[in-house]
Amino acid sequence: MATTLNATAASLLGFLHDGPQSGYDLVGTAERSIGDFWSLTRSQVYRELSAMAGAGLVVAQEAGPRDRRAYALTDDGRAAFRAWLARPPGEEQIRYPLLLTLAFARHLPAGELAAFVAQHRAVHAARLAEYRRERAEALAAGARPVDLVTLDFGLRYEEAVLGWFDALPPEVTGG
Amino acid sequence: MATTLNATAASLLGFLHDGPQSGYDLVGTAERSIGDFWSLTRSQVYRELSAMAGAGLVVAQEAGPRDRRAYALTDDGRAAFRAWLARPPGEEQIRYPLLLTLAFARHLPAGELAAFVAQHRAVHAARLAEYRRERAEALAAGARPVDLVTLDFGLRYEEAVLGWFDALPPEVTGG
DNA sequence: CGTGGCACCGCCTACTGTGGAACGTCAAGG
DNA sequence: CCTTGACGTTCCACAGTAGGCGGTGCCACG
Image (cartoon, each protein chain N blue to C red):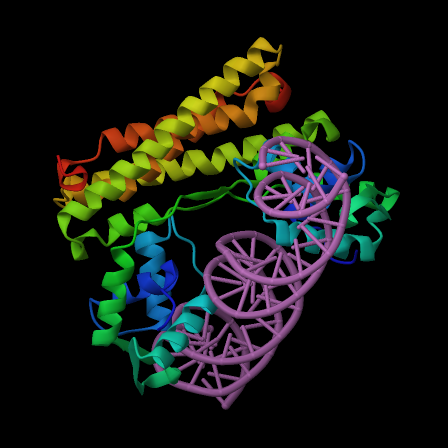
């Protein structure tokens, strides 16, 4: 591995610390654990896995049923992961198409905008409720504050977005 | 244009409503106006422009000094833009590497994490201050609430993130 | 004046990320 | 037995990122 790992590949290595997993498993694990702030796709997971196998960071085990092939961490993989983790993390990236629509709203008839806005608001309200549920559940299961930091990020984010929706001027909400 | 426009290409068309611009200009315009919630790169702008020129959505004008070539909107381009704008905007995407580091923090010696966190906090504090300045400036220049919606999104986002930083447990901040 | 540096401008490549189609496999149920 | 659906991998086309390359006009400074 001449060039440094990308964040997605590194995350996969991170998950493999808990034991060998197949690509399919890893997609599920990742979605559950970092999916709220780090998107990844099946395609890329498989691509990274075979690249890392080629680089010796992981080894493919015997194929099981349905061509299922689990990958295990190697010592090189462990080292590469630690090296990646020690690097200063980059800035966050946000891409929000609704804001694009809003920015160009003067080219759009008034009614349509309000519908889009309402729809997005609903999505965020649902997400906030879900995060609150998850947080309560985690607390009940004995989670410490440090275990909740990423979830809390999501919570505060959704609260902020919802607050923004509710403060939108009537030209936008159709009110 | 058989397949529908992507958001980046559509935005370029949006900016071209105000008159012909070169790729270079468009990068600047876009960064200033939508850069806070929609990232784009020089490479892609040029790629989209030549693709759209091929599809007849824009026409390249005579090359000026330094090979500078401005593109102008065509009627097809205007139509494609409107069609894109009328489509329901997709969900937002956030990718925040710091949260990844946090999620794998158990593999990291404690001190390093605190430094990363402090550094990111500073970036967000600065961004919040900048947004507040911009907002005051826009208001002074007579902006209406509807002109501030995207800026307000950024403001609320940064406030939320800063609040999150300040509520982080000591294990993370090194306190 | 003239020239060297810098901003301007387009282009290119390699890589990362997304979305969906394709395709075989095993398990369960009508 | 046959269908359906979840499992599991692979492939492809496109979108997006990061940064380098190489020209060119402009202007400040010697």
